[in-house]
Image (cartoon, rainbow, N blue to C red):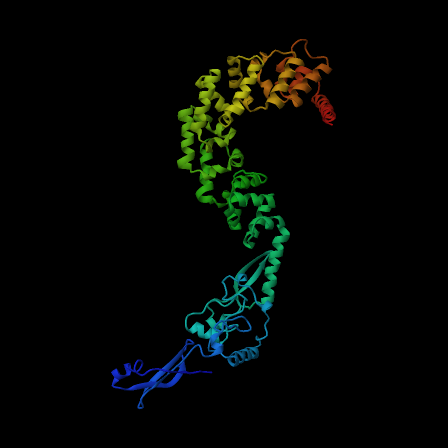
Length: 527
């Protein structure tokens, strides 16, 4: 319906411009609709004088005034669409069999590989038509067509996008090209099923983080190494991209680590400490670092243990970091090249720390505190490179002070530490003090005996020192006076042959009874 408004216009103002056109006056001869929805008019000359100018007003139609009118499906209507046109269009769609599709039958746009053009109510624009109708064809001809849906385009758009379906592979769902259309009910059911699988398998993980269904293959694969939901959360917090790795790539990298000696049970610990290892390629990273370790003289049987102990070494450049560290150990610290492999096996962390700082601070401390010469300190580091990791205030100094407190001089302390540097790693309350008290009170030895047998401090009090002492006492073969510490050094078999003169089985049975008795006594004291 087209409406005109007639306004009286003074000829002196409006028609003054007409006089410049040979006094020819203009008026409306016809009115037509613009292809894009706007109004238009044509002017043709008239022979009569023009006193009125007929104008087309976009504000004279009460329906046009409501420019935000919507269809029953929530689509914005053109200002020039009438209710009759809308009803005719709906009738045409009903004839195609799609006019009564309810809102719940439509799929959300996030179920497709490509996003459909939906509005807030998930209904398709009428200008595009539904399911590739005539509206969609017109838009395609203008080059303005977008992907309508994975099941709606097909032949109308020339087959450029094909059809998308959700395929099920084991318990994982993905989009792929097929030649068959997918029912919106089936697609929605697939999505709900996938979501339910995630929630059932990893309920805690879903609560903590937003899990992408693409992660499922990787999570299931890592679960075979003993990782649980709490571990995945730790990996996500430490390095989120590690859970976005393709499962095939992750499998290739972990299987390579296992092939060079990493134990299956150690994979979990490696991933928790260094989840980035899933991103390191085999050819450009893992193999070069393994080759570097082997160049230090480390046997193949120990490569896996070193990786498990210090997985972060893969994040360091071989040329710019690891090799310079090795050169510093040889040239500045004084470790012999033949001992490098042994040092790294004892403490793989030595490759990934600021060796210059740790060495200098501990060298200066030991030199001043107990008067240790450089050669003695180098021997300490070679035998027990963990020394470079220990805190001076909380580790080295308290143990040196303990040895002083039991009557040792600096020379005795230096002798003990040079011979048995791991004394610096032993607990004061649980290890050193109980062994010292047993040495004095039960074995009737002097503290000076430790300088001759520092090995005593490294032996287990419950598994070796007390059982052997009590066994010889029960056999009445314990010598009078100080108990010989040399009897604690050999293996159980040699101890039975040289000192007890009995079978190994007899000694092992005695030790078992003693351990059970000691456990019972501790349990009673505790409760």
